[in-house]
Length: 472
Image (tube, rainbow, N blue to C red):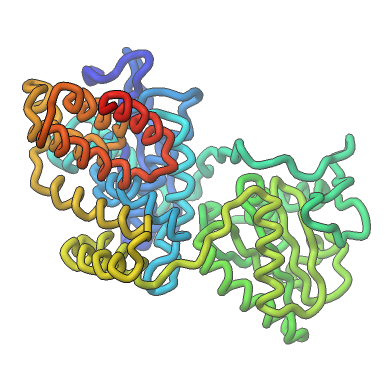
């Protein structure tokens, strides 16, 4: 039977991931309920981790919905729930780089989950795994099914959803040939480039292949050949920026450019994918792109080339070029992160709340106007409070709506569960009813929650206006 939350306008979803070996063959499972309807979905990857499968389950659950909906999503992964409700804003502000100047783990999937969740109103709920919850058990069976099939045979890859907000790229003629390049990135191609023949050849070779895994999702760097260019470059570029570095052992400068790009790809944390192409193993692709010399670097998006670099390149020159093509492709370019802030955020993510609070306090003494540090400190304090709350804190407040302590607890839990607007409404209603110290206590907590969510959050702007109307 569907849960009480489920109706024609609200989908109740259970997600789970499974992995054998971690890393190893893995699977993800999704069980949907809406109204009287039910649906199951699962998929697999040959080489992955449990956390990636937990993330992929949530991603597929939200991407598969055909229209924006109210969603109650149950996951037994604290990693997923805390990441999307608490850590995500900090990661985005800090450019997806941690205190070791390395990308946030699984940043590619976190970005994709952030985009998928933005289309819906999602209530993120944690459920204890393997504890008899029927929906969780069903999602677990699906994830295990995917994992077992990944270990034994090749599966079809999950549905790919292209970015919807990316600006239009170069136009085509009626044959699908590129006729113009982006105005932002001057073209160095000598003429139109038609990849349709190459794509057809690659599809045929892939169909003849006897072995091979699924196209990895969100990897930072891959090696490609003419046999894999269809899936690893052309299809991947439909919803990601792919930079192809052509190299050959006989051209040392091409090896240098390839290695610099490998490092820059790691710094970008999944903002774009590096495809490393040995020119001897990618002669069809090199010919289609009309390469004339090495080193050669090509940027592709939406299945089409954006720009070409040929000849030796410096690291600074490559950085500037990547900045231009990422902007042309409509991507966010990660910004450098203050190492002290990165360390504080890392401590918070690892659950070392006392150490994180001390780190943020120290930073604010030296940088009193830092909005990032204030937001981080507010998150730490909220997490400490939530850790002591009962799971039914919201129900307790609903049963006694004038109880300020219960309302403050419920608002914390609602914000952490992705129900920010409900949290704000709960406290603003009490601000209107109270005066003196109680009103000021409620106001301060609202300001703290606004800081956690971020000043640029539309829900925060709306709640601030309502709070001002009540106060003044």
